[in-house]
Image (cartoon, helix red, strand yellow):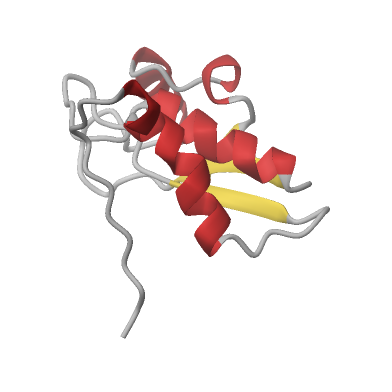
Amino acid sequence: MAQVYFKSSSTPFAKDALHLSIKKLMEKISTIEKGDIVAIKLHMGELGNIGYIRPIFVRRVVDFVKEQGGKPFITDTTTLYGGHRGNAIDYLMAAAINGFSISSVGFPIIIAD
């Protein structure tokens, strides 16, 4: 069986906030070596949708990869259905509106078409 890690998003203590716990989790699972190119694959959300990981959390993962000497980039693929993720240009625009940009996550976003 695979090892599964869980962190509740609710806590009464600021030191246990979810965005601060990401580094602890990454330290448990990381196999990143200096010079590794690391794809961080995630859904950056449809316009008007809130069901995606927020950029502040992704930035913590990117920062961890950089600390380990890796070269991270954010990636996802387009969709077959209509909408704002049907091609790379529209997806990048939707991602930016949802807060994903090179300045917010700290590394490039590549749509893998």
